[in-house]
Length: 201
Image (cartoon, rainbow, N blue to C red; front, side):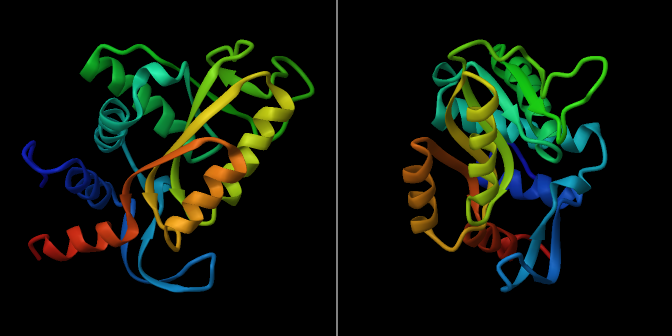
């Protein structure tokens, strides 16, 4: 159980473990490499555990990103949608900061409300902070930025993920150069493993 005196990274790892989103074992990653951990935010089962994760994202934003740098939180479908919602709620509950959240459909509807984007209205020139679960090679994040560029007149300013599981800072650097945006993570894979190793058995 994490305490308030623990660091943000420690509280985040504790929240992932308690929610079931961080699995221990031997897992084959998308890259083909084997890992003793697998992060699956889709396993977060309920409101209290999602709220704990959202509080960590909100604290990271206030501490390192700056709430003044963006207008709307954007959560790409599907796993990041609840993350964006939880972060928006936590920003308001913890810090009194009101930020809208938006997300995309995987496919446009042909009837009823046909907009590709739901949630907060994406006004022209709106600055978006993309909220997501993990960074591996940056490919899906680039797809999100390309989707926004093709379908909305908005400006992504950065991406915040929970876990940076990339192969190193060169991946982050290449992503930032390719997109012209900033990048933050709450914890790196290496730091996650270090924190978990120190936790009581």
